[in-house]
Length: 175
Image (cartoon, rainbow, N blue to C red; front, side, top):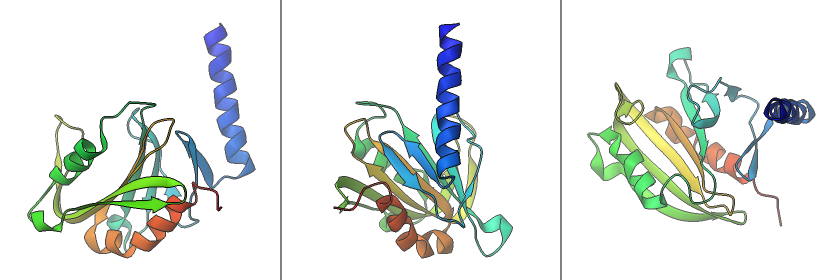
């Protein structure tokens, strides 16, 4: 009974947060502010903490942004995750970049690549998508790293880079 009551309180808290600012949402120890034209998508896996859709020129040309948080010391090390993301792409191995940046008060590892994307859970069935790109961020945080991954048609992902970086910065208060 106590667990049920705790679950109800957690859900009420999440609903209250969305009611205060429907564009803001927490992941790990961070709170992001969703751009108005990016839409909510129901999470398609219990591992995902949030999921958004970035509209493209046509409805079938949208990009997906997924968020993961596994708590302190969870989710594996940064380089292994970055390499795993890059390995989901074939055909343009020279396109992969892994670089560190400072965004607000956080150290962020940005991961970019493009080519033919093998979408799907590791070890499960994959869907092959050509001319796709990745723009990912692994945000270091004391409550555990936050993983943010945008995948979609290469032109859309590339054109969304500036907005994606601005979006990441919404999670950090200005100094």
